[in-house]
Length: 93
Image (tube, rainbow, N blue to C red; front, side, top):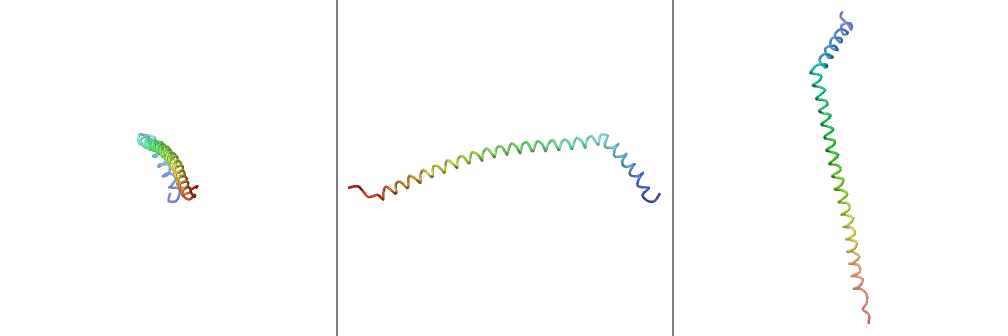
């Protein structure tokens, strides 16, 4: 048994050993660690989602404030233009 025939019993032995180890407490510990990591990732995603909603709300508020400022600026510009035009009109005699 020198060629590939040796690999079959070795692979079988390692497969059986892996099943025994993973079915025992070590396997349960690995499964718990994976589940904990997935749970932590889900919590992180939920926190990120809440933060995203908060940032979106702040952005909407800033957009509204910008619109109001633009309206005020337009109003002020119209008043200045009216003042300039009134100063240019000749006085009535």
